Image 1 (cartoon, rainbow, N blue to C red):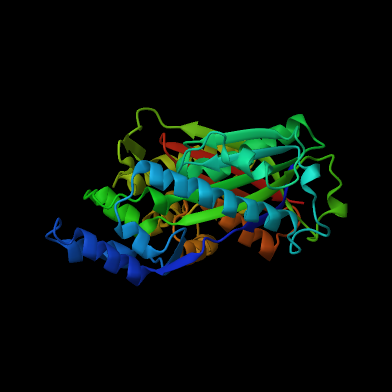
Image 2 (image 1 turned 120 degrees about the vertical axis):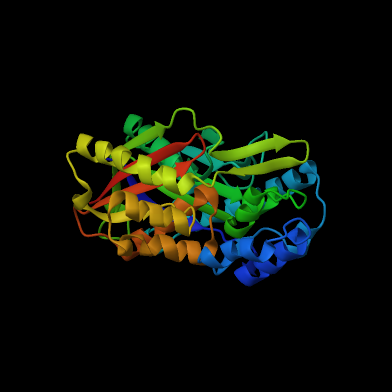
Length: 362
């Protein structure tokens, strides 16, 4: 089966402590919310300690047009995306030798926080020595589910072309979508959660000689994947696109939806693959927020300790939309997995939708 061989990050340059973010929100929103101090508890309750963003915090206090925000997105996405690819292909933690750009057969680019045509991976291909015939597969609009979906599409590509090496590059610059004049509670909650993150994964088909490339004794193989769309749930999560840019849509019902909907979805997926929840040793969950993680635990009846790595990523990086799941998976891969142990990779996004991957360390 196709295997995930390497993952690396490119961390945006500016770090913001959660206390700074809370002071920033207090300054902007106090006049519009009489109960601002009660609402600001979301910053404390979310268990985020710090985040990284593409611009200095003062940049977000100024009014920016959609064009200005999007130009900043393109500039940062190219710079950070290029670095993430280099870090992935030169990652000594996972690779016994550097992978040359010429060896890459396809690049799957995932994002939801900016727009570019030509797309970002095309711009990066002008800066790094990829082959001119490298396949380009940009994916836009899957939000927090996008990173897992990108891995799923890489799995399918490598099933069709088992000799292939595929990059999944996720670039999410959520901070650049910030609307300083949006006084909705969704925007306030989004401000407490969302951050910028960039990550790149290398997926290889099963005819690639992994022993000659991998530094690890075991690597996660992708056994199967499942995409699920919940009918009539378009208003749960996403963007409201207006003249000023992207305005966040973020339903307060997301945790309760997860509790009711996720377990049947997961159970059916595992049953189809001859497994049960008790067979899963590694729970690789996109940490949409502390309440989302709590909903995972309650819905699936799993030990809270299985979400420790997801919470660690949330604590240190916030919710980076699609890139977050790759940050979580990277830490599981660094820790290593016992041969033949199973992992479940899960992420939820707009639609409302679910992406699941069944992994097996081999």
